[in-house]
Image 1: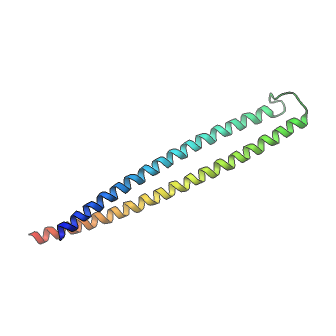
Image 2: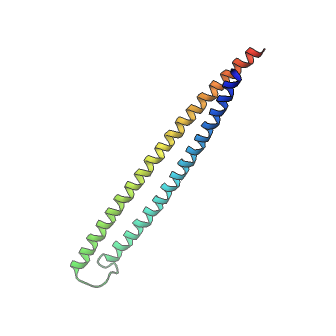
Image 3: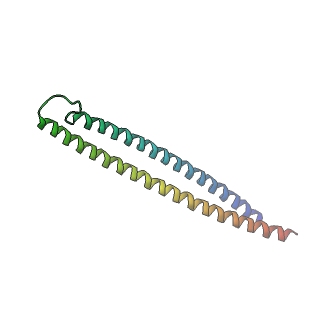
Length: 131
């Protein structure tokens, strides 16, 4: 009976190890996604900054009326604000996914530790019975 229980615990331990491994992979993928979004956001902000500089009076924009330049500047600022909002939302979603993956990983680690303690307790008990 103890051998059967120990074998069952070994199987559960292997499953827990697999789940912990998968959780680490998910967390790594989410962190990589977060990095890519951050790079994308930086590139987008640089592009917007360049567009704003090019459309500002004296910034090298095409010659035209002050009204056209002002309108272009307002549109560029609004576009940049919308892009920042979108990127902030994406980044927040990725942060939440990372937190969830870290929570799942922590829970798995706790369960794995508990299983190890139980397995050690059973081994100790089984070795005491065999003596």
